[in-house]
Image (tube, rainbow, N blue to C red):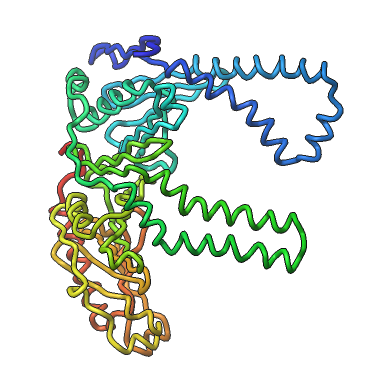
Length: 448
């Protein structure tokens, strides 16, 4: 294991002293961190290109060489110092990360608050045989990370942290190793490519990139205006097609005792985990052009986690089987089981009112929305934080109302345009279901 560091005592005299070995990151890390000073200079040049050009024009060849002779070693020294003074250690209850030379910073990440641990490998990191460890922690918006570790060390540390978070003793956590996984789904590259071709977002951004710039050129005849609009549109078109294909390539979902594992990426490989019990809601998205093939996309909201995609594309039956593993005991309601709004709701939202629907089962609150791109949102009763009824003046006139349920991931699922009497009954019944669901819910534990 790379970079064993100092030994720090942990615990008080009554408990005895437990030695904790502090470790360093992989020796390749200084090369990554040495780019920081260079990035600052590059950012200044991009922010003020005219000023940068004037300053460069004043420099002689000798001055430029001297500057490079100073900047390159300084950047290398910065990278080395930032690596040398960064340590991490795993204690009985927390992951401790110490950084900084002049200003010291120590992060204490309690193991029971870790929600997910992802291992990512950018392209150059894969070549170097290293990986980045990202941690989702309850109560923080930004992921803490350890970059870089050896690829094998990153996987071993991830397994150790998950074992510690599950309650295994420190002495046996190393022996537990990575939990075995059983593959549930793999998205073939051909299916992914066809799904992107049939996606409305891809065609919409591509059409905008082809139509808007010529119209702007005819109206303004300004090259800078054309570039300012065309480049972002082309970038958006590429991100919604080629970018998504590269990021979602070889998408694999596997089941293990520590949650659902997701592996994907053509150039940059990512190994993500959907932690058990933390999923607040699931959305099954069904674009119009996918319906003949029976394909859907599955998204989710996880409390305290940025991971939001479970399946980029899959047959509906297979996707529903994976959803049943994410939400145990939940059966996805079929279209026939969703009750539509009353016909008078068409005066509130003409035409689009047909896309709304609602089904409430013993385990889940399910609301459908959308006509061209249908979305079915599923919220387990145990994950409902609050429920409310909203009714605007036009809805009051037509005797309809919306029922909203809020989840722990700061998301709201709406059952639109329900009969007002039905909405009042649903409000009271859902509040009772939520209380009962939370009381009977299984604990949110790793490897439970």
